[in-house]
Length: 261
Length: 258
Ligand SMILES: Nc1ncnc2c1ncn2[C@@H]1O[C@H](COP(=O)(O)OP(=O)(O)OP(=O)(O)O)[C@@H](O)[C@H]1O
Ligand SMILES: [Mg+2]
Image (cartoon, rainbow over all chains, first blue to last red; front, side, top):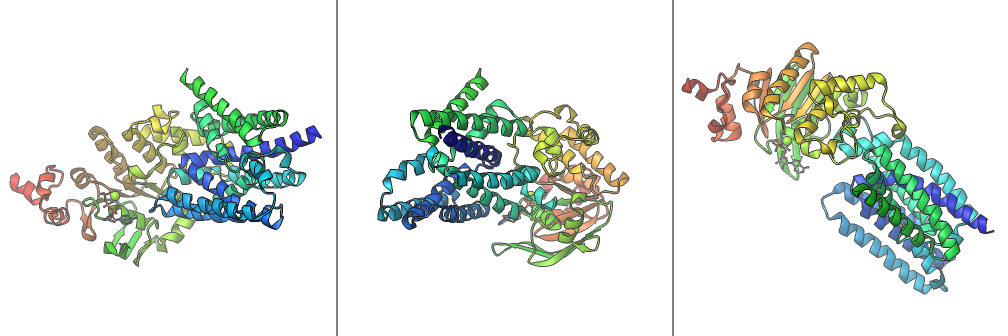
């Protein structure tokens, strides 16, 4: 039983951290980390609707996150308005809507901490299978198109001339990212998911100067944080996301010190 | 052959390029001159299909640019204006030179021996081969620009479009750079379009000159037309201060002075 819970959480956590580390590289290189905050928080509106209707699936959270991420991606693309404030408006709306709906539903407060900060007990077999499927598709998507995204991040005009469909790949990236973020919420929680979009690349950059090294070190440090964090969360009975992120921050601090010394 | 017909580009209701028509033959080395905001970058972007005109067309070898790019994109080398490249990417010079050679599963990629030889060759042509494994963000502006030039050459392009390649490049190397470009257009019959603010050098090295300021004010063989009036028209009357190079033999005031 113990091992079932830990195993499920670890499988989900490891698969998602690998994928998020690769995506993190592009999110950081293009300075879009705040978009991750927006997407994760936007899922809250959908999660609240789940409670309200007594559902458990991913449909509502996915709907909210994908809609928010496409909107945010569109605003980044247009680039002539203050994206950060637009992202703020989008996720604040979703959070407010979520809290409003939740307060109309019964018995929500017990689960609140888990939604916000993660809970290993909430990870089911269904979540594990869904994560495996999403990981397979997402991993092939990101590794197959890695040079494409690299060129787009370097200079979009060169990407266009190379015959890359920039808009399609750009929006697909955000859709895949929303799906991955929504799947991470049960384990990590809404508030802390963004750590997995920022920390892998920060740790990676402290240890390596090259993109391959950054992604590899990022993935390894995320996996370590997830596994260590899950064990700690189980035995200390603390929220999984918070525990994992504390481990991750410690690793980041160590990598920072190692770089300075 | 590049054929631009009645090209008109509008940004926010402002006409940026007005009814431009021109032909550039294979192997020609063309210089585009004009003041800041003249539409030089917009013109080369339109030639690449990156900017969509409200009127007119751009054809390369008889087909619309978009189709040409789809079929031959890799045969165009393009050096964007310096500032719009993301120099903060954590990649080495060799990765930057190879960056347009997009491959599936690029994250696991290892460059082949011939790819490495080609990278080394072009880096040495532009005098930065010793920087091959340095990170692009740690290079100086001029070195970054030379790396970009090497990148353009990796496709063995038929058409080379350079938007201010001499930005950040020192005076001594500039002369060498023009020589290299001239040789490429001669020997490899590469069509080269170069935007530049270096009036003296442009008039000295290129085959054809275009003076642009929203409209195309002149287009002719270098040395064969009288530029002074056109340049004055394009740049305004302060032009005389700028022209001091005797490379521009036909400039009226140069003649006057002689
Ligand atoms: N994306 C854009 N949106 C609106 N206006 C633009 C845009 N790009 C360029 N312009 C305008 O078009 C005009 C021509 O710009 P362009 O960049 O082609 O000039 P340029 O000749 O290359 O100048 P420079 O020598 O400074 O590079 C300018 O007035 C500029 O303000
Ligand atoms: Mg320009």
